[in-house]
Image (cartoon, rainbow, N blue to C red; front, side, top):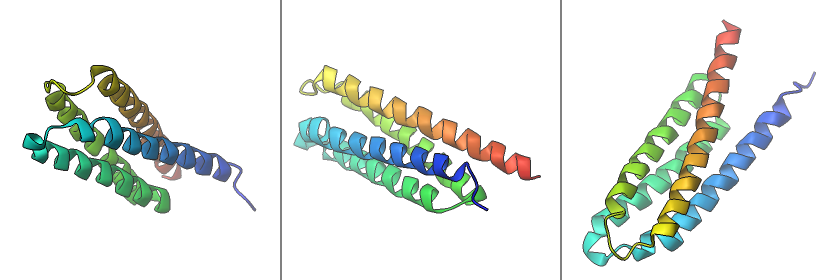
Length: 129
């Protein structure tokens, strides 16, 4: 017997994945490329966190239960670190403020979706008890 909620989770995961990949491309194109070479360390940290968001999201998609919740928590932590790095980048003169705001908006959308997914997974886990 097929679970009727199965398709809903797949669609949610697909939407979140597309938003994360869009966020990754946008930040690489408009933020990372504008960071001065002198601040290469910040550029590397931003790229690392973007990579970790994508990696942990894929782990969350392909796992279940407590492991999925752990990876969703890791994605939230990565997003928080990226938000912190954006506060540092916002002080650079050659960063377009409108593009940075758009990146932050996209980041918040992804964070809210991940938090909702995590809450749903935790509720589902508690139902089984």
